[in-house]
Length: 507
Ligand code: UN1
Image (tube, rainbow, N blue to C red; front, side, top):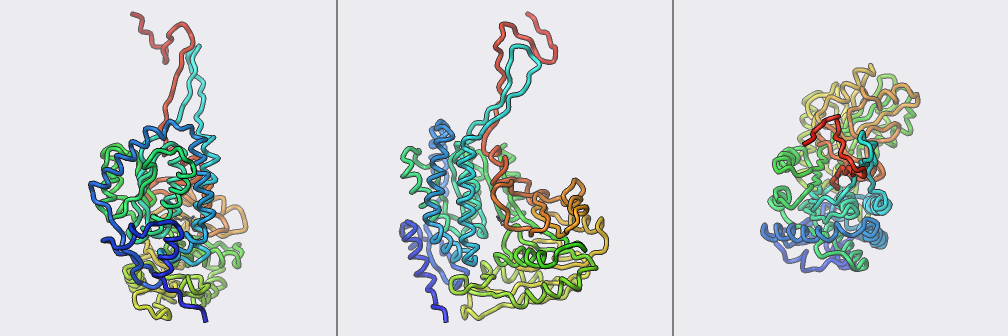
């Protein structure tokens, strides 16, 4: 028998330990719940519209001095943030489990992702370089310089409540920009904890301007202030395509920059030569991990007819036997859905899959936790006659639609026939079709993998996707460029003034 964890008490213990003052999370106007037990674990103080605007203006003041701090020195702050995160890993990871419902190893993995991006950003702080470019004019030198951009607004979702902020914050800080963060209303406690951790790093650093990093707890109108305020140079927003459709044009209207990380409807293709054991592991993690609530979750699976009967019954068995349970008390692989709405959306999708001729295994509520307002479900695997109805949409729940395919060209077309374009994978031991999948007429996604699942990307690569996924890139590679402005500089060190393109203009 495992001991029953009092979720409310455990939340308070962790917040105290992580250094979050009770004043900001208890006795406030915004209740917050844990999906683990469904109970209320906090009452946060929300900011007013005026407070939010003031915070942005204060961040803009911070920008004026932070941009002048040499980048490697700014990197020192992020190094300290990485240090503090290492020290807080276990507590913050557990708080992520409480607030987002992640299993222990995924809660810890999320904090590890924060540490990784800090390490990446520290190195980057000495590599924010531009090119020197050959000029057509004698006695001239042309180069590009990258400068800090301004206040970076971050709007994040419940499913990666802290890692997504850290991707943005670590890069923004080394790039010379302050950060103002509007976390999901569902996961503001972990946001406050991350802010407390960063504040410890700032105190150790000793020379940062005030208001370099702020959290705005509140509802949608607070996010809108971030989007519309002229002092916010870039908004990095993670969430639904519906949200992105509103945020994107509003930012474009005032010529502000955006990084949009929106929906995904990620697919995998299992080819005849696939290693089926490996594919099975990758598929189950991709589809059931984080209870199907990652942007990168595997949602559609195309299996070649020659291996369908070998793989799909094994997959179905895994769905029937996977452990579902309380992430604080058990070593279950699948934790709860975030809330009732998520459960209802899942049921709706399953009903409409049935109406389209789908055959459903799983999807039922698992009530063993004995807690009425917690939503634990057995993940669902649905064999579909074809890609239709709910298969074409992202439902943020553990539903895997499986379809048989016969022809590679056709399956690539079907793979790409959805509106989102985040992540994709192919399982295959021969190189021909794998390379084709990665080529210009292969997967149309921002992430395309071979012999691994769609989820669980490392921070070193650029993260993001095409089409209705929004086109933004965060995290590794050269994603940092979105957080800086580029200036092209041409210097004339001659004593004449030759004009480019052979133009003459002699007064
Ligand atoms: C998300 O779901 O919003 O690739 C981010 C992954 C994680 C990040 C997911 N590293 O699954």
